[in-house]
Length: 97
Image (cartoon, rainbow, N blue to C red; front, top):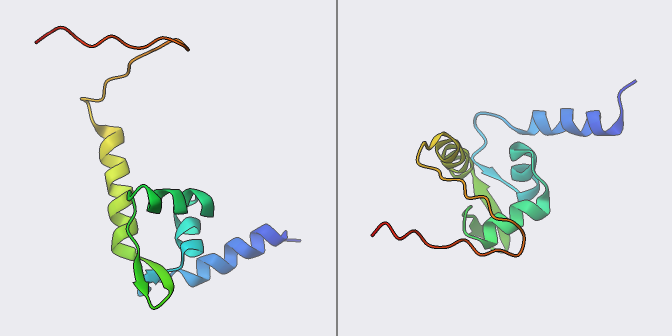
């Protein structure tokens, strides 16, 4: 017996076709496997860009793919520097210049 969550996931999978160009925020969040609140935060931070048709907010397939590609590039970046800071400390700037 399948749970309601499994039914919802199966239903979402049916909604995403190769021909679908626009996604509601809920569909886009499902495709990215993030919460709706997180998706709206990404929109507010302008890390994702939506299109508006009348009062409807939609995300394009191309925008979702670009966002994932940017995430992939950031995670593969060898120049990423990790700075460990203990709580309450402020990192000092480098004096290399």
